[in-house]
Image (cartoon, rainbow, N blue to C red; front, side, top):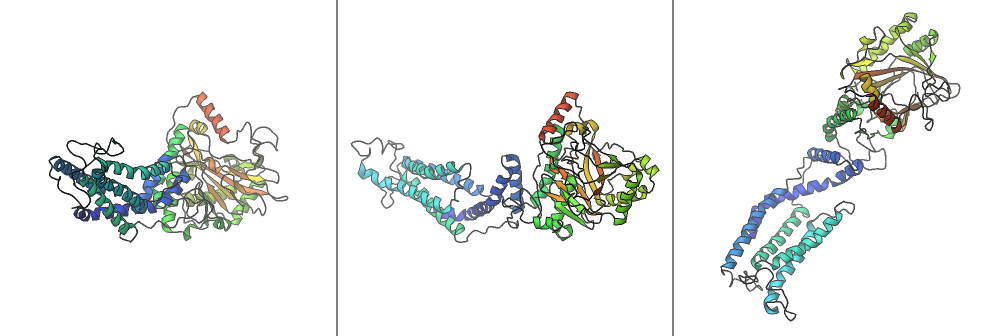
Length: 567
């Protein structure tokens, strides 16, 4: 009968084992995911579900065979108990077992046939008890052997490692105890079930009977602290999702928006770098990457930050998340030279002096700056066609959402909708050796953004001259800098699509080498916030103080403890 049951349930058992083995094969990736996300259980759960979906694995597929066998066991238990109670098995034995109904009976329930001992012997006497004691001992031994063969090894670092060890130790003993309390016919059934189950499991797991199929996920690579498209960048192994990454982008963007509304910490603070060899060679070329990877990255940009034309010639990815992009020869050299000469000849360059101390060594920003206003264009009409060329290139990079028409009157038009991308008045900055812009974020703190009703969403820098040594725009948290080259553009995103500033884009500029100078065109692109809740003065002050303590720089009290210098 047991052999027939096993034969009928073999397809279900095979499916159960295949599902179990498929899940087990994903364990290294899941372990890496747990190490990466730490205590963020919600993200671990979401990413694990995406991983299962990506791999084509259903972790619940193995439950059905176990459920199917439960009614069979319950029915057999009741049948044997009933026939034993009626005395129909009293004379039915099995080899060394005198009766399949024993050792229990109507008069001896449970272990009354064994306990209490009388004069050092079981209640029923050794002659009667020994044949029935053999079966529980065999069951316990078979359970231990079966567990050692078919159970996966216990991960000593798992939170439930001790629970698993206790379960493997005491479960066979519990089954042995159970066998002492029921008719031996039921214990014999369970012994046969254990032996057949073990043999089937050995065939499926060890001898190739199971056909485990999962979708191709690619190799497990060393990818630093998060998702990426390149190769190894650190010594820490982490999980590399692909389709799962796409599926999680929208949730990450929503999380960032929620963080902006609540003033909470950034929910997507991972840093995803590219291969350092690629970085040293000028960055990752999207045209040479797999289309699905570029599509995923493009969607991440569109939903989490801003849409970008990744097919623009000369575009290189310097960092995945937060996105940092450069474009070689964004502006022709002659346009860069003309802008630089026009700014210099205007006579309107002013020392920035951001910080308000009046001390050029202590202020946050000490470069000279020309804000291109309507008055500047009236006095320097040669700048206007050069500016138009630059704005046309910006539209090619960022799309028609960039409202360059707002600059026709050279007045900043505050955006009122998240989809309205408006440029602030552009600037041309000039750095001499010793002049600086200390570490800062371009994005506004939440309270200031809410008060203004908009947030800076993108920073576009165009270097107007070559700086052979020094003068890099250094990203403090990302561990790399961009060397100024005439005509090169640098694009990054000071905030998320939800309006929360991205502290990961904190950036600094090295001094140009002695005898060198640095010219850069600066354009900040702004968008309206999704919502603008009312904020009282006290709440705004508290949020500003919290932002400063988090590591931002106060315009009134620059933090000299971090004397890094900025572009």
